[in-house]
Length: 121
Image (cartoon, rainbow, N blue to C red; front, top):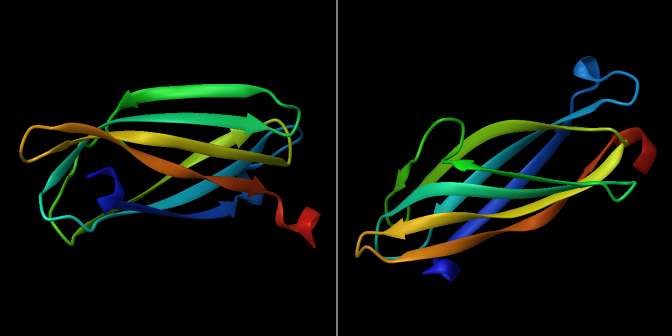
């Protein structure tokens, strides 16, 4: 089941919302269910690491107040944000999912980079 869930992420630096030592990044998530059963996203777990090695763990129910059901071959999209104290960092995590048959499993969110674009050029 876990391998049937594909998570894609796009990141955007929000310069207008950022200030000294507060770098705001939006991330846009697309979760695709490539399996044969509907699944419900129950919880999320994030590990956020800044360039100084400071780690923040975030856990909670659903995503942006929802616990979506994703039909077979369907997808769910949402956007959220993260604030770092450094201009570069990364995020990774997992979603706890429940399949139609009642089984629970973790779907990995691959690590992605948060970076102020001008630093990378």
